[in-house]
Length: 252
Image (cartoon, helix red, strand yellow):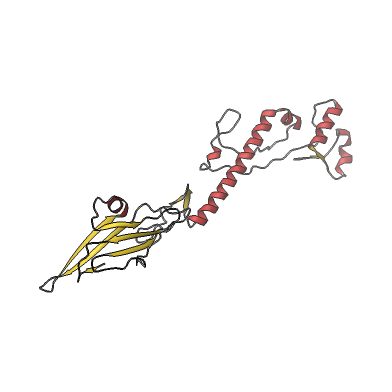
């Protein structure tokens, strides 16, 4: 903060009008008040402060306890009329409040910038980062109903290169991967379609849907499907053993 001194005394007003304004630092002005032995404000001294705006209600740092002297919503101190600077200096509460509110405002700006950057990086700019996942906006969904804010990775099934398939057993694999922030995979649904040809040349189609977590890992409803390899911190590949296959039958 700097103080602009336009005149030292009323008798020098005419002379000071022809001079450039003299700028005093804050310590210099306080020292001049002490030396003069008076608490009057020097003629022409004024202080201007600008409001830097208000913190949005979504900022958690802005929720401060309100009091008669402190507004509930932080805002930088704004002075619109001339006031003796020594009154503001001696009023320690005003000083603390203004500094505290300024600090909160800056922290709010920093938090909002950080959230905006994270949202743009991880949530396609159409959602909020909540811990390690994205909360998509209501408009961030495609025609298929899936989120475009944090799209789900689509697993690609492949035959295992380690286990040789037979007419009654195959081992399928896929990669389990998810970004550090964005989407969290909680389960896989395995859908098996079976097409059987009958003697009269008709076809019978049956479909079975199993939950990898609830049905296959637990083994409760999957006598013909069992995990061969479950991912951990080192491995990201899931292997699934499919048994009970029937020859001359189409499976999809």
